[in-house]
Amino acid sequence: MPGRFHSIVRRLCAMALAAVCAGAAAQSASAPPAPLDAGLREQVVMVPKGSGLLSTSLETTFFRPPGQGPFPIVVINHGKQHGNPHFQARARLEPPVRAFLSRGYMVVIPMRQGFSQSTGAYIGGGCNTEGNGLAQAEDVQAVLAYLRTVPDADNSRIVIAGQSHGGLTTMALSSLPPAQGVKGYINFAGGLNNDSCVNWEGALAGAMGAYGKTARLPSLWFYGSNDSYWPEALWRDMYARYVAGGAPARLVAYGPFASDAHGMFASRAGLKIWVPEVDKFLAQLGLPSQVSVALPGLQHDHAPPAATDAFPAGDAAAIPHVGDAAREGYRKFLATPFPRAFAIAETGAWAYVYDRADAMNAAMERCTRNAQAKGGTCHLYAVDDQIVWPKP
Image (cartoon, rainbow, N blue to C red; front, side):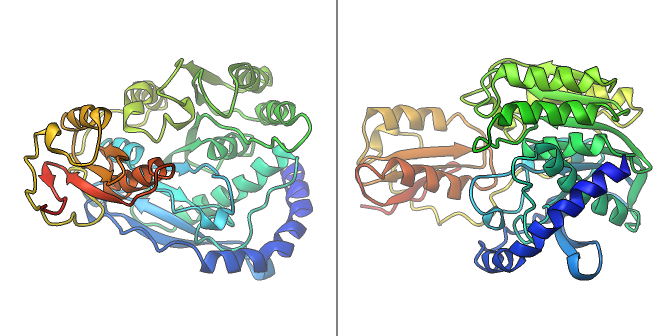
């Protein structure tokens, strides 16, 4: 098995060298880093991978529960957005991070090579989906090796999870000899959409089948029926091929979720779907599976504008510029949990976001998208229970 892995990686290394300069240039233009959450003991470390000419550094986020440790570990592998991977923001995944922290786990989220501030170039592998997953898994192996140097990390109790492209990475890793202390794997909507390739769906299912031939630790799979990336027939085929090779796995087919099941794991609304199943899985592995830690409440990632009291906060009819749909949306907004933000434009566009640290920025982004047809500039109207719109 190591021969198969290293053979594929060697074939892909030339692609990495050819793109290093372009990746470095893109990295310099990426967005400023998100602020760290002291309440969640958030820390960013550049984890070394390899040595010599092909060495890279992986931007890796650590979250720790209160206390001294050592803490059991959950490594979460991120997905891949469209566009240049170096422009992809550092993954934080706060709802699932909080779920694992509250059970006493250290949470580790590495940005793989070529993503965000990680150095080097993304290794795509063309239409070789199996090779892509194995190349990504090499980054996770580097992080697992680094964790053995972290004093408060309990390297005898490790779970590897991943969403979307990170799910493919996780299942590729499951096919390799496991690092000491790894107990199991969790796959949230894992895969890679190579729709520019002929028969990319067959290549994806084939990759999962190949991984399953040598995977021997248990895994838990989550897929929804309205996933915009993977038709149900495809993910059922992926699972069937994986277990056909003898790999122990359990599939949770949870049906539809919101407008797109692909985002279930990262959504706070998705916690009620996956947390009970993951708790059962962790208990079966002999790992902590109950809430044992009180965490600070979710807070805005930056200070809200000053309150203006321009209009009564609870009066939807007082909102200027907007129509009945926005007023009804505001009434629903008033029933949502903090942190929350409601944005409007003079042309009538509106949007709101709640239960997210980045609620203000996210509401502005949604409002701006909604305003594109009519024009106008969006501004925050309300944040939490305060009106921040300027007085008339």
